[in-house]
Image (tube, rainbow, N blue to C red; front, top):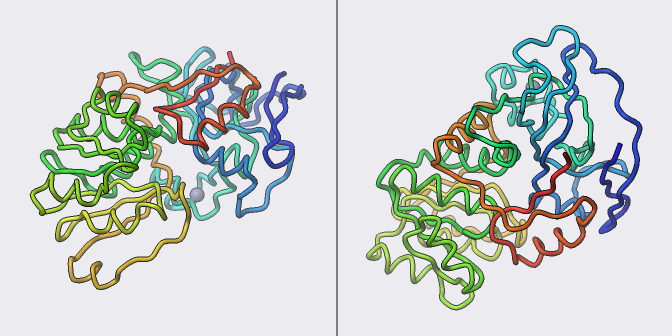
Length: 342
Ligand SMILES: [Zn+2]
């Protein structure tokens, strides 16, 4: 069976792997349909992972798949079902896993495609509890974006930042995969959305997704523009994932008592924080990683209801990974890069 592996830094290879054995008790065997790429894949490809991992490593953290066989004791799924796969291998036993908060698992083995083998392969065996059945009205592309892209945004916006209808939010890098999802999710509940983009050609598509104001941060200082747009008051919530380049500005644009939620640091992991601003303005900084299982369900329900639609930048051919990762690294993308496996 075909698989795509990272063999060394910045080098990927299409390989033939033996098919997996029959699924063990509690597992399902899946035929992978669609793999979506994330910035996590860029980190992994660059060789900047902070954790040990073994090469070659099958890539792909986020995917949808069709059930082909059930292991002993699996109920609630049957061959032919379309599922969305949780992105990390968790224990299923700790208090957080039992409560569906797998992203807080104490004994997490790692993220697929990053620490552990990923989903860019034809067949894979996975614990059934890490698969979420796809509802009618959501296709295999939408299901591939539920575990990381849209699920992460759901968790950030609604579980963590507790974004409310009518609030104003600044979404950094609105043309990124999560940016395109966050714009739509915030608009769907009636928020005012200000977003930043890195080139003029991304302004129109961001407006088309529903953004009320789009700022090209390479031309204008987003801090000044945002303060002007909010009549110097500042925004209720900042959606961060850029990190070093935007951190100071993101801190500045919050209103008193504002919340900043972050899930990434694509421009660099270290940034200075003005502590006086943090306590005097009573700001809240919230870290967010991945999502709860329920966020995947909600993501796909929102796709089915038309509240959020997958924004696809490019569908690449199997094996054309380097081109895709370079495109992501150079920030040319608007939306997601996906790869169809079957
Ligand atoms: Zn656990």
